[in-house]
Image 1: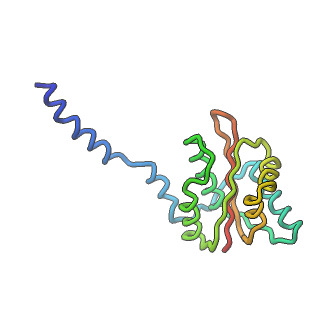
Image 2: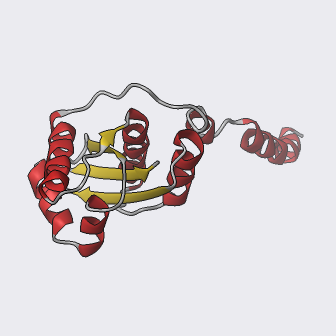
Image 3: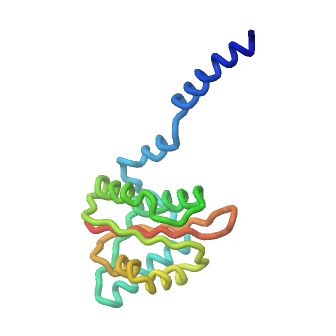
Length: 165
C-alpha cells in the first residue's frame, strides 16, 4: 500500500519541486533594470583602465569614462564563465540590451580574455587581435572592466565592455 501511494505521489512531488523553486534568474533580474553604482576595483582592473585610456590618448582618441554598472555587468559575465568553465561571449546581447536600457547606450562592444596573470598581458593580446583592438580604439565614450580569479584554478577571467552614449 505504501509503495503504491509513494508511486502515485512521486510525480506530483517532482512537478511541485520543479515549479516552486526560484531560479537564479531572480537574483540576476534584481539588477536588470537599475543602475549599479558601486564596484570595488582590484589592481589588475585599475591597471587595464590606465592601459586602455593611455593607448587611446596616445593615438589621439578620447579617454573613456569608467562606469561602475558596466564593470558590474562585466563581473557577472566572468562569474558565468567561471561557473560554467567556458570562455565565450554567451548572453552578450542580454548585457548589451541592459546597457542600452539602463544607461542609454547607442552601441556596445565587448572583449574577453582568459588566463593572463597580468593586465599588460591581456592588453597585449587584445592589441594583437584585430577585432579586440577595434573595440579598444572604437568610437566609444564609456567602459567598464572586470578581472575575476577562479578560486579553484587561480586563473583570471577578463571582461571589458565598451559603450557609446
